[in-house]
Amino acid sequence: MVLKDFRKAEIKVPPIEKQREISKILKGLDNKIELNHQTNQTLEQIAQVIFKSWFVDFEPVRAKIKAKRTLIPTLSQRERELVVERAAMCAISGKTEEQLKGLDKEALQQLKTTAALFPDTLVESELGEIPEGWCSSNLGGFIKFANGKSIKPSEEGQYLVYGANGIIGRADVTKFSNAVIVGRVGAYCGAVVYSLGDFWASDNTIVASSTSNTQMLPYIFYQLQILDLNQYAGGAAQPLLNQTTLKSIEVVFSSEELIYQFNRLVKGFMEASTSNVIQNNFLEELRDTLLPRLLSGSLEIEEAA
Picture 1 (spheres, rainbow, N blue to C red):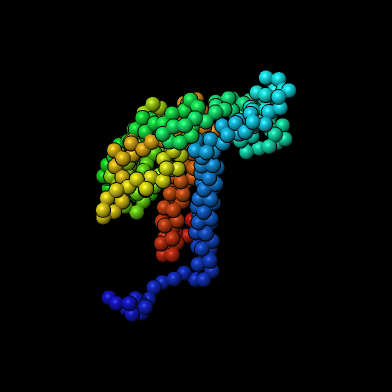
Picture 2: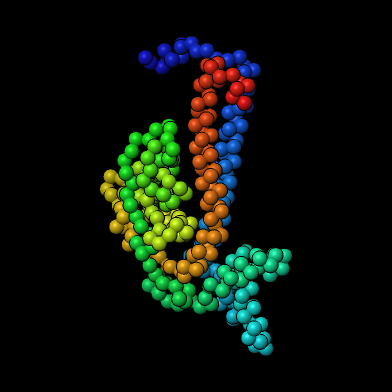
């Protein structure tokens, strides 16, 4: 069969009014999918900004250092401490001192607790200047890596199946739980997604989880994301990541208390984002199922609505 034969082929199409009604239903699904995508982008951008500020640019530490340099000699020790503390709180929250006054007591106390976890000095290290008391660590020191396993995903099953760039289907079996999925090979080598709960990961992925507990998952996700892992890929024919390379990557490691504060802050973002991803996967399957049934007339508009 050639192109001209396709052009001559006759197909049945619903009346124009019914086509509009079908389009309205499908557009509603597409709009919800797009809204979820936009929401996730916003949530991830906020969390990325916080991670970079705390663990890459050390902005709260630099704010403390700057505040110390501008202290008035006549201030008491307690007043000096308050000036430095407020500077760090502003850096952590992205608010001015005036805006801090509008926060409730619980929010202010949480900011004070977090600010206290940042030192007020930078020291030299193999990775350049880092906050005093922090150290350099390779990823293998706090992340456990495992290769995904081959599986033939289906459209049904209790558990999600992840490939190098997200959900690729479902399965009735599970192998991993609460982890970050890294694209191991090909076009999406180095892409990072995460899954809360049980799932299966294909052999095109490497699964990263905490060596200690699942509370580390948000920190692990954003640490791997900001590293731009594709730059560490080898392979002549196509990009390829392996566990040995990932384990050896050196990063700056703060206190566990500060990491837990970060995880507490962004945990809600991750849960909402994961929920949106799963919902979008369902909505896309629903949309693709509805379209042929609506066009053929096997499903009425009223039923679909």
